[in-house]
Image (cartoon, rainbow, N blue to C red; front, side):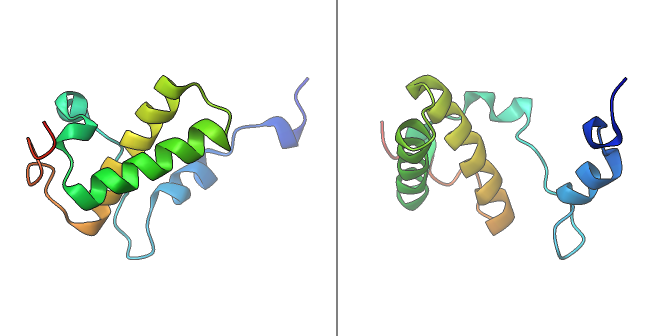
Amino acid sequence: MASSADRFDAAAFLQGLVKADGSIDQPPSQLDADIGPADLPPDWYDHWAERSAIREFDGHQAREVAEFEALQDTIRGMRRAGVSLDRGRGSRR
Protein backbone atom coordinates (compact mmCIF):
# COMPACT_ATOMS: atom_id res chain seq x y z
CA MET A 1 0.00 0.00 0.00
CA ALA A 2 1.29 3.46 -0.88
CA SER A 3 2.14 5.82 1.94
CA SER A 4 0.76 9.34 2.03
CA ALA A 5 4.19 10.58 0.90
CA ASP A 6 3.87 8.49 -2.29
CA ARG A 7 0.49 9.91 -3.28
CA PHE A 8 0.15 12.38 -6.10
CA ASP A 9 -0.91 15.80 -4.81
CA ALA A 10 -3.10 17.14 -7.62
CA ALA A 11 -3.82 20.40 -5.80
CA ALA A 12 -0.11 21.15 -5.35
CA PHE A 13 0.54 20.29 -9.00
CA LEU A 14 -2.20 22.62 -10.24
CA GLN A 15 -1.11 25.42 -7.92
CA GLY A 16 2.38 25.06 -9.39
CA LEU A 17 0.98 25.89 -12.83
CA VAL A 18 -0.45 29.21 -11.65
CA LYS A 19 1.96 32.12 -11.82
CA ALA A 20 2.19 34.87 -9.20
CA ASP A 21 -0.08 37.17 -11.24
CA GLY A 22 -2.82 34.51 -11.31
CA SER A 23 -2.42 33.54 -14.94
CA ILE A 24 -1.80 29.94 -15.92
CA ASP A 25 1.50 28.82 -17.41
CA GLN A 26 0.42 27.08 -20.60
CA PRO A 27 2.42 24.08 -21.81
CA PRO A 28 3.60 24.09 -25.41
CA SER A 29 0.84 23.09 -27.78
CA GLN A 30 0.59 21.02 -30.92
CA LEU A 31 0.78 24.32 -32.80
CA ASP A 32 4.39 24.61 -31.59
CA ALA A 33 5.34 21.28 -33.18
CA ASP A 34 6.66 23.00 -36.30
CA ILE A 35 8.85 25.44 -34.35
CA GLY A 36 12.53 24.60 -34.14
CA PRO A 37 15.58 26.38 -32.78
CA ALA A 38 16.19 27.98 -36.18
CA ASP A 39 12.83 29.74 -35.84
CA LEU A 40 13.73 31.51 -32.59
CA PRO A 41 14.72 35.18 -32.39
CA PRO A 42 18.51 35.49 -31.89
CA ASP A 43 18.40 36.22 -28.14
CA TRP A 44 16.00 33.32 -27.54
CA TYR A 45 18.13 31.05 -29.72
CA ASP A 46 21.06 31.81 -27.42
CA HIS A 47 18.84 31.05 -24.41
CA TRP A 48 17.84 27.72 -25.97
CA ALA A 49 21.45 26.79 -26.80
CA GLU A 50 22.63 27.52 -23.26
CA ARG A 51 19.74 25.63 -21.62
CA SER A 52 20.28 22.70 -23.97
CA ALA A 53 23.99 22.50 -23.13
CA ILE A 54 23.28 22.66 -19.40
CA ARG A 55 20.71 19.87 -19.67
CA GLU A 56 23.07 17.72 -21.74
CA PHE A 57 26.29 18.15 -19.76
CA ASP A 58 25.19 18.97 -16.20
CA GLY A 59 21.90 17.07 -16.40
CA HIS A 60 23.40 14.07 -18.23
CA GLN A 61 20.56 14.03 -20.77
CA ALA A 62 20.96 12.67 -24.28
CA ARG A 63 21.50 15.52 -26.74
CA GLU A 64 18.15 14.97 -28.47
CA VAL A 65 16.28 15.00 -25.15
CA ALA A 66 18.21 18.04 -23.90
CA GLU A 67 17.49 19.99 -27.08
CA PHE A 68 13.79 19.09 -27.07
CA GLU A 69 13.27 19.93 -23.39
CA ALA A 70 15.24 23.17 -23.72
CA LEU A 71 13.08 24.17 -26.69
CA GLN A 72 9.90 23.54 -24.71
CA ASP A 73 11.30 25.61 -21.81
CA THR A 74 12.26 28.39 -24.23
CA ILE A 75 8.81 28.48 -25.82
CA ARG A 76 7.20 28.72 -22.36
CA GLY A 77 9.64 31.52 -21.48
CA MET A 78 8.79 33.40 -24.66
CA ARG A 79 5.08 33.14 -23.85
CA ARG A 80 5.63 34.40 -20.30
CA ALA A 81 7.62 37.33 -21.71
CA GLY A 82 4.91 38.09 -24.27
CA VAL A 83 7.21 37.38 -27.23
CA SER A 84 5.51 36.27 -30.44
CA LEU A 85 6.59 32.87 -31.65
CA ASP A 86 6.40 34.18 -35.23
CA ARG A 87 8.84 37.03 -34.68
CA GLY A 88 12.02 35.07 -35.28
CA ARG A 89 10.88 32.60 -37.90
CA GLY A 90 13.49 32.02 -40.54
CA SER A 91 16.11 34.17 -38.83
CA ARG A 92 18.63 31.31 -38.49
CA ARG A 93 17.99 29.21 -41.62
